[in-house]
Image 1 (tube, rainbow, N blue to C red):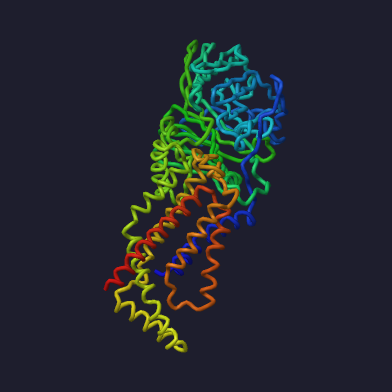
Image 2: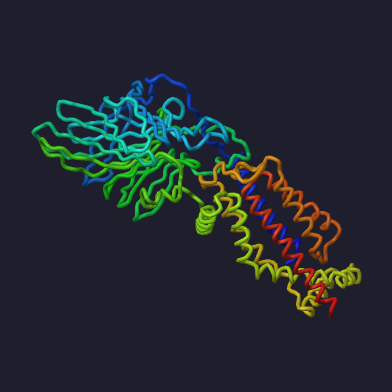
Length: 562
C-alpha cells in the first residue's frame, strides 16, 4: 500500500472517532464530571431532603416491604421522608474522608484524598456530597409488621474518628420497643472497601422473617451542562452497573432508567454500583440470591435509585442475627477490584475494544512496575508493539522502497498514457507484477495498528491509574491533551519526512497537495486527544520513519552494487 492509502485509512478512522465525539456534543445532552469540592463546614451540617412522596402515595409507600421469597417481583417502593440531614459522625483515613448522617446512619459524604480535583491543587474529588451531588448509600431491615428503615434516627458514641493504621469499627444504634439495630462499619485505612454489618436483636415473643435492603441514590449532576470538547470524562459511562456470575455485567445509563424500572433477580457473586468516570460506589451483598430494583423517580432529590434486597432470613424471638455486606467507595483500581468482588473490575468499561484494551493495560501495568512512570511505559509499549509487527512493517517498507525505485518509469508511463487513465493503470500494475512489487504490501501493518490505537485510547480514557499521570517536563498529565502541542508537532515532522521517502505513483498535482496537507490535519486532530495517546502515535511514527529510512538505504545500496 502506498503512503497515500496508509494516511487515508488512518485519517478515516481518526475522523470517524472525532465525528462520533462531535455528534455526542451536539446531538444529545452534554455531560461532564462533577466538580464538587471540599468546603469548610461546622460539625453538624444540615440540608432539607426534598425526596417527598407524591399525594397519590399512602403513608405505607414510604416504608419498604419485606421481600416475598415466593414472588421475587414483590419489592419495596422506597421513598424518603422530608427531613433534615444531620451529620453525626466523621471518619478520616489516609484515603478517605467520610461523613454519616443521623437518619439511617447513611453514608452521605465521601472525599477521595488521593485524587486531586485538578493537578497540583488541594481540592480533592468528592464522590458523595449530600450538600451538592445529592449522592448517598444507606440500608435497612424490614419484616412483615416491624420495620427498621433508612428513615430511622441513629446515635453513635464516636462522633469523630481518625484512622491511621488500624482497622476500626464505627457503630450506630437505633432502638425500638420491639428490637434494636446496630449498624457497624469496619473501615480499613488502606482500602476503599467498607464492611457493613446490620445486627438485629428481636425483643419480641414472635419469630421474624427479615429482608435486608441497601440502596444507592443520586441525581445527575452532568445533565444540561456543556463540557469542554477535550473533556474525556464526557464519553465515559454514567449510570447503574450490576453483576452476577450467571449473567455477567449489565448497565443502565441515566436515560435508560427514565425509560422504565429494572426489576431482576440476581444470583451468586452479585453486586450493584453507581458508576461514573474513574470512580464509583457499589454494594456487594453476602447472599447468593437477591433482587435488584433500579429506577427513576421524578421530582425526587435523589431521582436515580439502585436498590438491592436479600431473601428473608429468620430472626427468632429473643435472638440476634447479623446481615453483612461490603460497600465500595472509590476509584476503579483494576488490580484491587477483583480481590473485593468477582467482576468488580468490569466497571472499567473499554466497550467493544475490551479484548485488546485489557491486555494492553496489563502490559502497561507490568512495564510500569519496572520503570515507575506511565509515560515511559507507553514508550516501551510502543517499542514492543513495533517489534511484534517488525516483519510485517519490514515487508511494507521494502515494497515502498522498490516502488520508489520505479518512480521514474511510472512517470514515463503517466506521460505516455496521460489521456488514457485505464491504460495507465493497466501498464502500472503490469510493471509492479514484472518487478515483483506488491502495492498492497503495507495494508496489514496499518490495519492492525488502528485497533491497537483505538484500544489504547480507551485505556487512557478509562484507567484511573493514568489519571493526572506525569511524564516529563511539560507533559504532567497523560490523560489530557498536550498543552503546548509538542507531540502533535513531532508526529507531523515524522510524517513529512516519511512522505519524502515514500513513493506516490499515479498521483496528480491536486492529490499531491492534499497529501502535503495531511501532517497538518493529523496535528490538528491530535491536539484534541490525550497526550498519552499522541505519545504512542508519535513514538510509533518516529520508529517507523527510522525503520523505513534504514530499509530504503539498504535497498538503494544493493541496487548500486548490482
